[in-house]
Image (cartoon, rainbow, N blue to C red; front, side, top):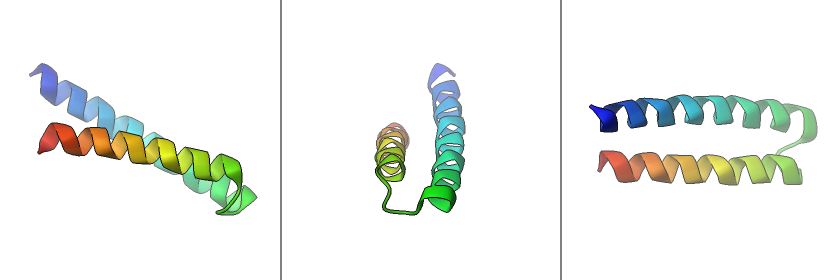
Length: 54
């Protein structure tokens, strides 16, 4: 049960981070350092999620 809650919380964080990244990319451009940093943070979250579900 705890694992399922962690997975759901991780999915929520992924969704939020993705929206933030898209918003920054729209305003700053895809190659701006803040967008790249946000993308890398999203990658970390996605990798954590994939480790939990595999």
